[in-house]
Image (cartoon, rainbow, N blue to C red; front, side, top):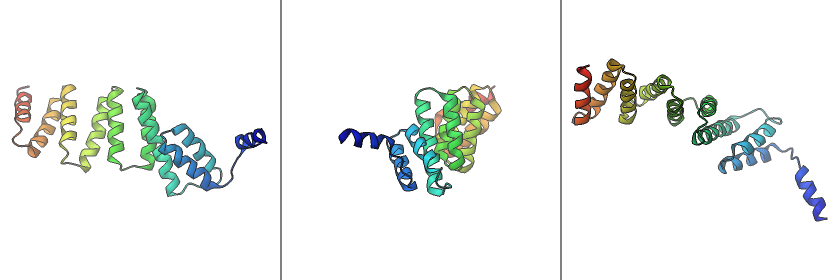
Amino acid sequence: MLQVHAHQQNTFQPNYPDIYKNLASLYLKEKNPDMTRKYLDSLLTFIRPDTEVNLLIGKMYILSGDINTENNNFETAIDNYQLGLKYYPNNLELIYKLARVNKNAGRTLKYIELLEKIYSVKNDDKQILQEISQSYESLERFPEALKYYEKLKSLAPDNSNIIKKIIQLNEK
C-alpha cells in the first residue's frame, strides 16, 4: 500500500491553479528559481497571468539574476534582470543590480547609463553620483566626470576629497 501511495504522489498532477501559485511562491521563498518556474509554467496553462502572478514571475527573474551574479554568469544575469524589469520597470534596486552586473561584465557605458537613470529619480544619492563620477573618470571622460563631481560637491560642500578631485580634473 505504501509503494502505491508513493507512486501516486510522484504522478499527482493537480489542476487547481491556486496549488501551482502557492507552490511557485513557496519555491521562490526557498530561493529555487527552477522549481518556481516549473510551477509558474504549470499555472499559466490554466490561467492568464494576473498582477499577483506577474509579480511572482518578476521576482523569479530577479532571483535568477542574483544567483547568476553570485556565480559570475554575468550575461545570463543581465538577461534575467532585464526580464525582471518588464515586471518591475521602476524598481531602482533592480536597476542598480542590472547596472552593477553590467559593470562586472565590462560594460562601463551601460553601467553609467543605468546609474544616470537612477540619478534622474534620486538626484540626492551621493553613492550614485560618486559611482558615475568615478566611472567617467576611469574612461578618461573628464568633462562628464567633472560635471558629476560638481553635483556631488553641491550635496557635500565640505568634502575635501571631492574638492581635490575637482581641482585635479580641472587641471586635465
